[in-house]
Image (cartoon, rainbow, N blue to C red; front, top):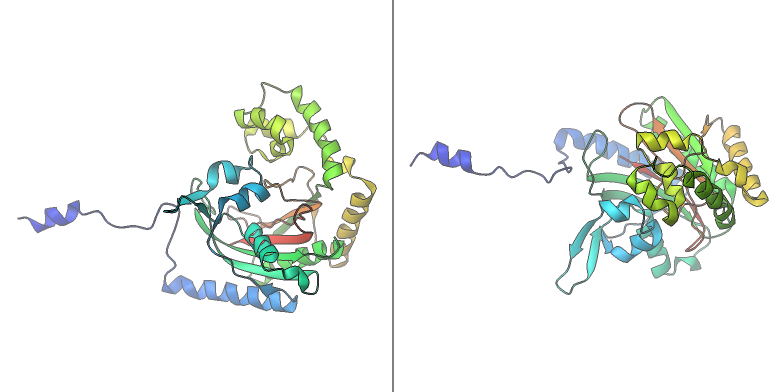
Length: 308
């Protein structure tokens, strides 16, 4: 028997699509990142919480929104022998809030400042800077009053972390989604605007107009981007309280010499965002993105996450 032919027919085992190994020479860089994250977390009094890689699918359907891209298209499902439906966690905020509630962490001094660090999973097309298994660091301020100082503190923290990692040309984009009352009024304006554009949007946007019109501002389709540029701005529809809150956030980060630019189309793709939202990234193909938000329905918090 010709062994060479037999060997050539053997399938070479590889890592799953969109997932990769971290080998010895690269490990040193990951260790340095982890060290800097731990150092800055300690400096800002954030304590680490680790949650399971597997979670109930209900957690994400309730917090991220059933019409979000993550829930509709990107979750890895695991069916157990007793027919329970679990998922590989697509993000770390929802599990951390679940742990906060489950373990009664509200009995601790509030607000609770916590962070997480670990692998996340999303079933999407792998490309530069986007894998199906990726690593995320998240900073959360949970419980207590919704104080704009925490929004600003996390923006400053992330800027300092990225600079400490040697990342240059950092860009901070910021917006406010207001409270539930602000968004309700704004959604009416948005629906009225987009109803006149029916037939000019992608299929997803046509479907989501009635379900969650904010999703339309997050669409990346070229024809939808053109429509978005003429859409009403949520900053023109903030209530007095949310307007004051947002102005105070901007004043705080200006005092800390953090450059920023307003982006009133920045809404993020998940339903738990409230009031201040932001993205921080480095110009170029591989973006380091942050998202800061609050969640009224479960707990009040500020948070941000960094994809590594």
